[in-house]
Length: 255
Figure 1 (cartoon, helix red, strand yellow):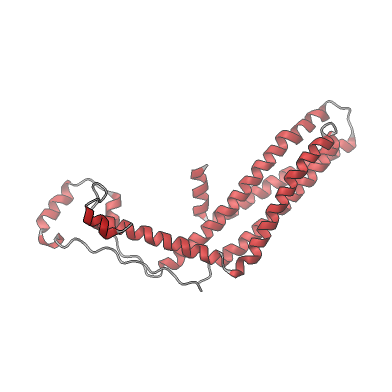
Figure 2: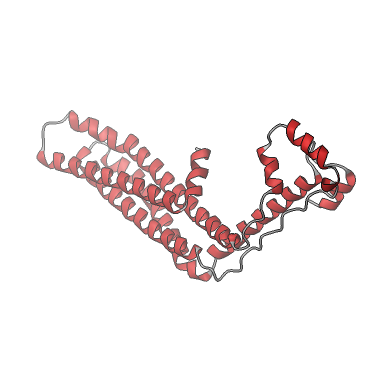
């Protein structure tokens, strides 16, 4: 938006002062610049390996999805073999999460690379020119005006010039964290679908058959693998939220 044309046309948002409008514009521009710098940091060549790993893992997940349709056709009436096959699927999904998490860890580490040029902190807007001319009016205004937390930001102390270094790092880590949390969310949905459509019917069929040690062993294994997979997802989510708290907040709100 062209600030000068906006001011000239008198189309300021209702109730917003020129100073506050300028401050908001500067904040938006700084946020966009930080986001751009964070994206450039993550697209650096040193992250190529991590991106390739993540792409390969996603391809593996696609193949697993295709295999599930085959398993449903092959073992719809064979709970023991279904349990064996799903135990293997859960093992592969757990390994996929570990690989993806390792790639994310590499990107998190690289997000702190200080070699990237920082975004300079913009100066805070100067107070209105007539502020000092009517001190008695200012005092009256302070007494009568309702508290406005946002208005305090207009006269806040200028930010530390080194802060943008951390801002770019935080933004980059947030992007990585959101990627990881979205991945585990996707895997969790897949696991729930597998349990609902394949494992639960097999459990029911098992209850209708004669006791069989081999079948019992197969179901113990699949239940153990499912439990280990769910723990891996929980641990991954916890670690990502610890490393990039803002990513956790964004997804929690979105959910």
